Image (cartoon, rainbow, N blue to C red; front, side, top):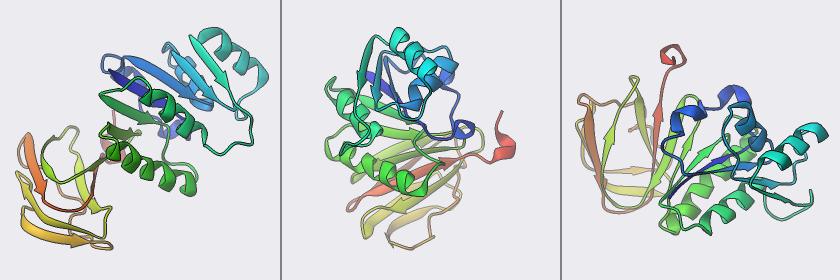
Length: 217
């Protein structure tokens, strides 16, 4: 099962959710994210959060439309997104797509990116998607990556070092290199073939696929 979670980040940065309808089996709207699902005519399987970001009429529409509606008090230990992720994990999903979690408040954005590590630690595949970016996190191993829309692809260490990083099929190849916090060595690369490979032996690695605004359709 693939689960899509939509949070309440800025709407102008939100990806076109319709593109992912065939990839997502269950949709969860976290607070304002449930309203975004309504706006894009996507069935709300679960609506969850404190719903302090929406007006009364919209909240009632969400209650009526959602198969499952769970409202929490405003003062709570978890963010609405954390509640949505906890609910998603009860379905033992193969992957989770996270929308509406970037491009807003910086503290929220950084915390949301760190949630990728929590999911990685539980062996749940997850990716953050907005209008211009896809962000994923990886444990040591060998992975294939493909590119669309002239993506720029960057690799950033999430651990203090990532060791023995090799990039194959990229414009700037790499062979068994160590990259550390603060390094820009692997920023703004791109594929020279339809598919490329990256592999490493130690550390935690973030991959960001970005599309320039002018190339967005």
